[in-house]
Image 1 (cartoon, rainbow, N blue to C red):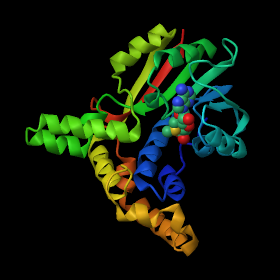
Image 2: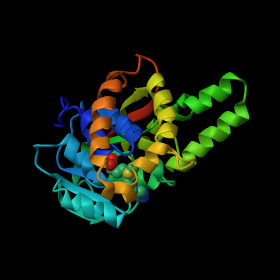
Image 3: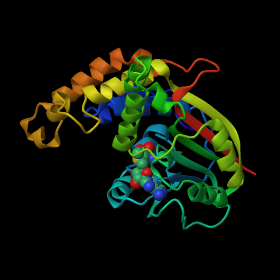
Image 4: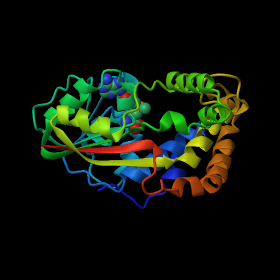
Length: 279
Ligand SMILES: C[S@@+](CC[C@H](N)C(=O)[O-])C[C@H]1O[C@@H](n2cnc3c(N)ncnc32)[C@H](O)[C@@H]1O
């Protein structure tokens, strides 16, 4: 069971001090996911550097398997000690036998894969009957909750709003934003039943997150001062440790309310937690 009492905001600000909005999004994501049961054995699909596993499963035995196509991420994942086994693989060709896992976990991965259905089919194949696919993705409401989109729509600039959202898609390499209904159909084709579709990142937070991406230079455009300050090239000057401390303290306070904010009942958010159950 993940640790659902942990202060993920502080933890992720410490790690992503150089990209604070990334910390905010991922901290809320973890807060949402940490309420879930993760039956063992677990397969971490697109495990990356192991940071998320470390945050969720601190003080628990390592996750059984993590895989990722990206060598450098995989190397860090292996070094993290969070996995019993790591492997290089692609989601649409899993080197694991049928029904070999009780849980497939995929955090912030599926939106980056253009051809998604073959990956879900593979997840369905390696899950045992009753096993769970737990995935976090940006939601079908993501684009329209962006501050830049809303500002343009509010003055009737539909084309500008669309162009703004398309630019964000490109910057973040997002290929789809499925609704809970679309997830139902996708999972059904992969032999699973949608058991949970829960939004996180409420509208107010999504708007601030989008503005902060400009402010902190996450969108790779313009010349944000912070991006320059946090550049690895300037690490040798020694001030970044102080900057990290400042960010953790200040945003750990200022963003606390955003971190703890829930999506109103019946409302939508920019993130979506999807849980599928293998039939
Ligand atoms: C945003 S990172 C998330 C990493 C990790 N799950 C986390 O939450 O920190 C997206 C990951 O998806 C991986 N990825 C991209 N295409 C993939 C594919 N076809 N199959 C599996 N993983 C893939 C990338 O290599 C990258 O590590």
